[in-house]
Length: 194
Image (cartoon, rainbow, N blue to C red; front, side):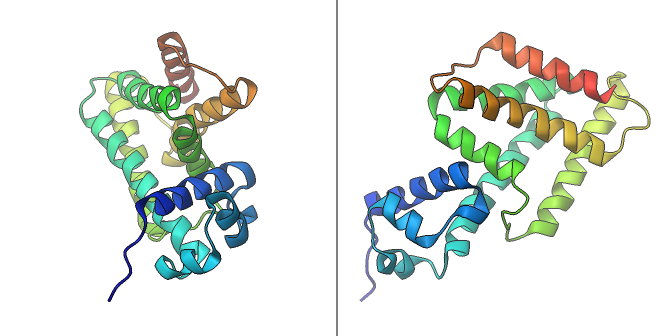
């Protein structure tokens, strides 16, 4: 008979992974550290995951897919690149106001290239296509430099908002992001791609 996972323990494990990735980066995360933070034995973790990598990968892939999917929807539903960026930044910052750890985890996932993703090539392909959609919209509205490359677009759109979030929360643990900050960061991104 299959063992049924304790939902509370599984949630504690996922939360511990997020905390560890935020605090130590992917390379600094160990099974022992995850288990200690989650209050479970390594045996319990290994009942459901073959390795630390499998557990982290599941959370990372889920987070990356959600970020990319929402960003695509933002681009497709916007008339300007500024509007699309504003929607994405608003979602990220408002999430940080409600769930700071989840937002910090998302930022850590985006910023740490050492984190393996199951479909890394596919994720990069999707992200490049996403950058191309941004460039297409930006050229149509005159918001981007005509020579901007997908890589340059990615550096701006992924680095500035996520680093801003991480630095802000690091400097003020009780940080509450505002609409003015959303607009300002979106404008900084647009200025960077002109």
